[in-house]
Amino acid sequence: MLGPIKPAQLQNGDFERGQAGWRVKTRADRPIIGSDRPHSGSQSADFCGYDDCDESLAQTLGIPAGAKSVRLSYYTYIETQETNHAFDFLNVEIRDASGKKLRTIQQLSDGDPVGAWRRSSFDLSEFAGRTVQLVFMATSGKTKPTAFFVDDVIVE
Image (cartoon, rainbow, N blue to C red; front, side, top):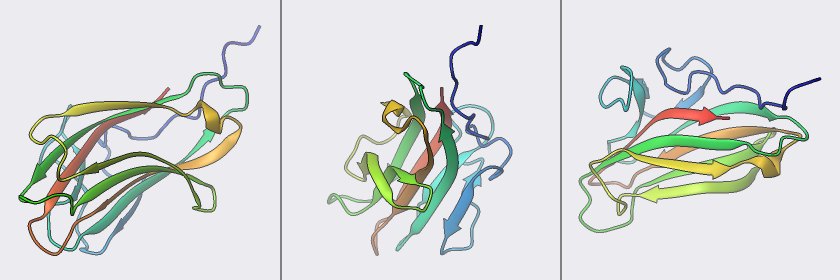
């Protein structure tokens, strides 16, 4: 008898192996993975924190057909210099294999609570039988930047 169908494992969700498994996009030619503020372990993803930022991390996942329960969870931490809101954003999206947005899972901004790690969790079972991309995408305005940290990304 076969056990329950499990989703393809997310690679390096704790970022302990740098950007291994992730596709990185940044205009600033800086490492997105670093040791500035890990939730656990010694590394996390560090988006923006500088003016006029546009950065993303993406990973392709196969969600098996028949999967009844597939959960995405991750931790975020926000630091901001903004006093008026909202100018800086972190979007978490599910896209199809060609990059078309299927759903925005979450949008965080410089106006969300800062200074503490927060856990988010979402059901991905609507994507069963599909190959999708998980994308973390951050942008910041021209002044008073916000840094968005992400760590311990899990799909189970």
